[in-house]
Length: 263
Image (cartoon, rainbow, N blue to C red; front, top):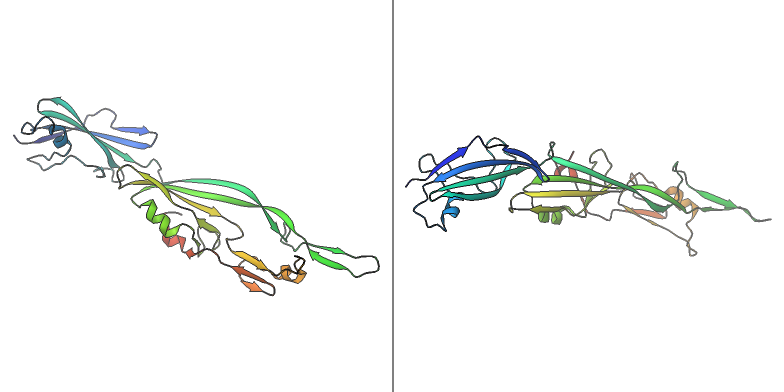
């Protein structure tokens, strides 16, 4: 008996909103499976191909014909009689209308520095009775902004591969209007139901002073000679000077090329 597939185009509420995103339900009626045993019929129903038209029941990961970003996540067969099955195909797509969801978490971290809010070198001078004035650079505790920026995507990219490729790297060029080496890529996390589509989260940690590190000359007593701190260039245009050096400690890559979908 030839296999016949008929789609129920009048299915109530074919598009639904769920906690994980939008969902589309398509219902198909399958007949012509009597040549198979009762055990095999539901299996053959979800893999059926119409003998006349060649139409096939959509499988896991197949895009919706009218909504390519919606893919089949679940296929379920329900017996309606000796030779009749209803097959329900559930499509899901990302609930984020712009392709991703952005989240931002900010905080303040205390750092030890030698500059005030106006970026002036902080010094203190002491003149003992009958002695010469002595000037030292002050150690100031300041609060700087720290932040984690996250982007959530529905995509086919494997988070394991992404993490091994980019985690621990900083932006080598200006990215999203921020200077080089101010964003550190965190491990990419993701989950999948079918091994094809992943809900991935890209995280980036922000450091306004860049992720470079300074090495500064200190005297035997631990103090920093005034001329050293005053010579430090903080905008990244100079990498070394008398008594100090600035070092790039994280690997770099161009985030504009690595993450073209993040704007």
